[in-house]
Image (cartoon, rainbow, N blue to C red; front, side, top):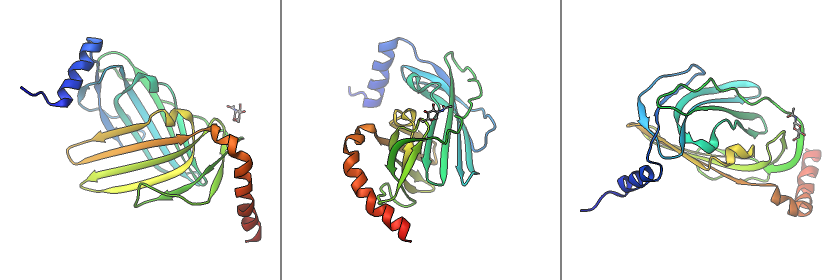
Amino acid sequence: MRLPLGILSVLSALAATGYSLSCQTCVSTSSTPCQGPSISCPADNACAAINTLSTAYGVTLSEAYTLSCIPRIQCDKPGIISIPDGKIKRGISCCYTDNCTPPTPTLPADNNTVNGLVCRTCASADSTWCYTSDTMQCKGDENMCLLQTTEIKGSVSTKTALRGCATKSICDIGSTSESSPQISMDVKFSCTSGSFGIHQGYLMLLLVPIAFIKILY
Ligand SMILES: *[C@@H]1O[C@H](CO)[C@@H](O)[C@H](O)[C@H]1NC(C)=O
């Protein structure tokens, strides 16, 4: 008899903890809390409410509220992703009993103090890759340079890529996958950190021509 790999990994996860939490799941495209079916979570997960707000030029582009299972390590660690004219803020709160309702998450506060890190920035609406010479100054506790890729497959299909500054809490997510019968969405967060700083002398040389171009035009 052959057991599908997925079932085997679920069984071994259950064996490891002996218990699996059940959480409500839903997605709402507003800040309003939603309700949805309960699912059984992987090991070491908590029930989370995640509030995501995207803004450009200070104007709200989209807002989402989701309930889901997430790894406990991501709990109560809000995050920010920034590009030169826009920002995505993510508030997160958790609870730890079957089908509990997490407290309403609060979004991280703005901090406009530059922190010395310079990241490349670009955006693509039709590919999971982008690269330009444009750079930006990171602010507050956005101590990482991020490449975020999103792949949506199903009744609508899109690929996007984004480079900018991010908090470490965003980088620690690594990747997320969500799927419904109609659609699947995979998001990956890859980061480079301040260790980039050892090349800063070299980086500054690279930036000098860009600074000149900006002054000239
Ligand atoms: C804002 O960010 C700066 C630079 O990272 C930091 O030194 C400062 O403590 C932050 N302020 C607050 C209120 O978090």
